[in-house]
Length: 183
Image (tube, rainbow, N blue to C red):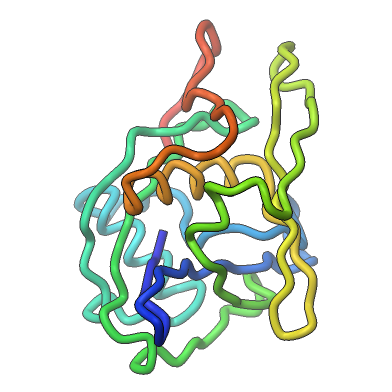
């Protein structure tokens, strides 16, 4: 979860739209990230490596400030969000890995705590019906839908960074009695 301040000092988050050619989650909005490689020392190293591979973000430009508790993906995988601060957005010139990333954009972090442009839909997940948040966002004339695990992680990240609770009920990171595997 890479956060930077805009010209007014408001926090924003970098997001990607996944390539339409990917076998999973193609064309969906996501955060840079991925699976731990054998050479990664820890999840922080994984996050920095993946951001560099996917969007060309130099790890030297990012200060990791915290690691959130793992979230459970719809495929039963543990996803551990790492929050990093990009000290100067002007120094970051995105280079997209077109095999994985179709587009990059940023959004105000605060939007993930508000009801504006948010809807909740009930979805079946591992045999349970759960509420799933959907956030509509438009940037540079393009429309994006930020939903599911990405929206859930961003709501938690916004709550931690901005020290406020969302104006809606949040789903727990890991519903009980569901098997997981680490990634």
